Image (cartoon, one colour):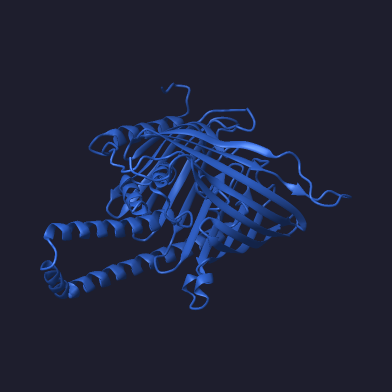
Length: 122
Length: 359
């Protein structure tokens, strides 16, 4: 009986923490979108000045690579860090084997696997 | 093939497995694995080694352990993986000085062949770690676990030697932009050959992972197809708040032989404003757990209701090298006792071939 109460209390605390985290996430995303909205014109101006220096194709490729690297790092920390300390980068062929193992063990999605592999082998 | 003699639960599990298999192999549901990896994987010898000292109730016990893991990728879609354990228990014998142990215990923990069928389904055959809960399959190696002692409920649902002999279908996929789903459906046959023995059971584990909240929750179900033919179930959760360097893990398991739970928060001191180089390597851990006996007895589980509280401190020297220490107190009607642990763990990765270079 006492054990059941302990379990209920633990679950209650966890539920509160989860709700708090979700609320904080929501708040952060709201703030983030507000910042992006307010920074829009200045970003556009800086992009416009950048336009005069680099060809559009190169700029878009670099921008896509940067976005992919950021997303890869995010997926790496979110997925790998759930169970263990995120490791340092390994050589590319080592990482290719490790990610295949972790795809099975940690049940990574196909997208997560590709982004993490891309980030870890850059 | 299903036969009329099989119990209803097993049939349900088989139907679930079939639905997953058919659904996952449908081109619209999951695209085939594309061979767009830029590099050719190399066979790896990895794993961990550790030297753990336990002091339980005042009795010292030195525990050296090495768990090499061999990974052999084959072609684009196959991987063979096997992990062995070499360990010994060195104890003090009455009337003799020093520590003495028997022969080194050797065990093949698992040896499995994985076939990556498509982007959200992998088929595994052989001997594999039983996916009941999260500790046995994902947190067991000494370099991963935050506290070196096993949870009291660990033996529930994982079989006599922590592994199953049979087949498994598993995978993960993005169900919605907000969350991923992972699943494992497995069947294990009876094996009485020690140390690769296993029970006959079928089970399923599924989980939902919300990347934005960094929260994973899931449940496990297993039907034992021998002895008392009972059902086992459990729940697990892992949460990493984005604002704090905090991990919270918890697990609950229930069976005829006992039930219980553990909850384990771990906090890295990286946010402290002083000694930042040292603090970011330091982790505080605590675990509270309770075990309640069931209708049946089990050699692997405590014989009486038990609760245990532990807290510890880990220090990460470099990636893969960790010093671990913890103190705990166990409470039961048989008497309370202190549990101390000190240890050093190391994770190694050795490529068996050229480690770099494009295909």
